[in-house]
Image (cartoon, rainbow, N blue to C red):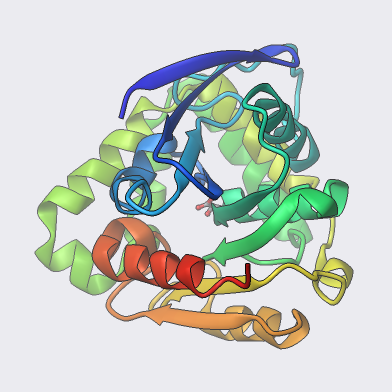
Length: 269
Ligand code: MLT
């Protein structure tokens, strides 16, 4: 798929746009970029129109005028503006982890534009005070020391034991994505995630058909948290990806893509 760039709000937003039919937007996690959706974008482009942006400050998208925190609301507004640019009114909106926080912020701000929702390896709860402090430390570390210490700290927690032991290409791909992230964008997103609101009350109001996906070994956003969200969103389905940790779509691309395609095919017309 080829890269496109749109001027939206105060940023130059890089994205890919492939396939035809029902629009499906995929929002990446932290501190990654649109390439984490490579396999899903390929699989979905056979059945729908798939739009995959780099979020503000990540990949090839600029940070714009953001000073300090890039909030989830700001990123959701960027996505809405990109959809405007593409003449897309409603879309299936899917996000993994930070992308899921952005998807929830999008649902709150633009409920009428959500045709269906996919929440992968994410949560509705805000950060604890300890987590906020750790984010600020990491933001400062990224700005002063670059991405290597962030990669070292994150890698063992992101992937399942099986992926770490037996899938060296996946481990290398994930590490390279982290190392390629821009420290300014990373710091802004860390500060934005630290400020994110509790979205628990939103879950009961979601009317869009919803799929929740989680890696069986995700320790960041656990299967039991995913089950909790499933219980709050009317009619939501839960798909647990065996053998995967937090990056379930990268660790088990085929299983994850199949879950998305099945969900899409089962949507009421
Ligand atoms: C992610 O994968 O996007 C992050 O783990 C989210 C977070 O740090 O809360």
